Image 1 (cartoon, rainbow, N blue to C red):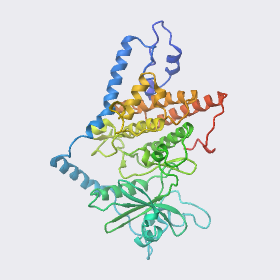
Image 2: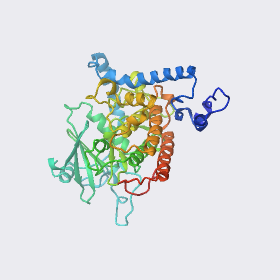
Image 3: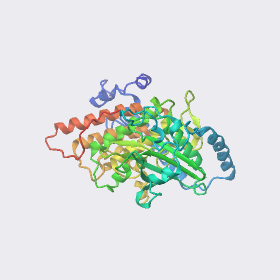
Length: 447
């Protein structure tokens, strides 16, 4: 592929022959090769490698420095407002109400003859004309926003569990008031516009929305098993074994690949993180929360826009230049991979300083030959897990490269993760020690 053509093979050893380790990686694109040969390289190349490591260390720490900065100047604020104003107009035009008289359909975005009608047919492409709910329908679905039905609280607002008249269970996201979040209109319209364009089994589905007075409500698919972050914190009772974590990583990679390459127009999520990954009863992952999502640049190399995202997951290059590309999602995905492996949050404020930035700490352990220390202590240290962990960290650190051109595309991440999962399963099958897993069986190759 292109990555293989641009980059040469690994340099042979001083004897003129490649070592087995070098031979194994010679065919690989540059981003997938080992960060170091750890004992197979000369001192000169080791010095060059160390310089590369220092650059990557610095890039991981850039956003941490930004956490201590004071509020922006009035001039910068005016520039952001000036930029946001045309964006608010361009983000979405409110779709017209349905042509028929009477109340809007309670079936929402997937309403109409194609939505679970008598013949069981389901519409694959949503009809934007039938996507508007009334306040009466929302109140009925959520029992007047009953506190007992509240299932979450995020930056956008509160989330309630609701039931539509046809029995469909949904999640109702009620936005904060403008005085609490002055950007609520932009985020609301961005989310509706982006979600109306997408259809993928690893992305949360949009059913509809409501815009009335100060109320901004988005009705989406209900995913019953909580967030990935809750499971990594062991809040949901069901433990995620290493194989399940690889499956989740692959689901997320498939979803983001779809956004970047296969949607009607390239979409950059801008907020890939564990609390935006929802899990089904069978522990399949679905990516949610498109409030920060942005249409990609198309033929251009990047989109210049104000920085949005979550501290710990932000691409340092985007943070410095305000130039957004799909590789910014790749950086966030790299942080997510380290999070899956270690179960630690990207920023661990209660730990000592050298372990506070999880990605930097994990890289230091990996380079020092102690990658096993990064593994979640609740996971068994089997040879299969340790080998898969090393490969996963290799991929994660490539994703977090300081220069966006050096990061793999999400489609490359998918292929790398398939290889990691196959290696893990093959080693488990070869191990005489029985492996116990509560992971339900099923189709593990969904795209």
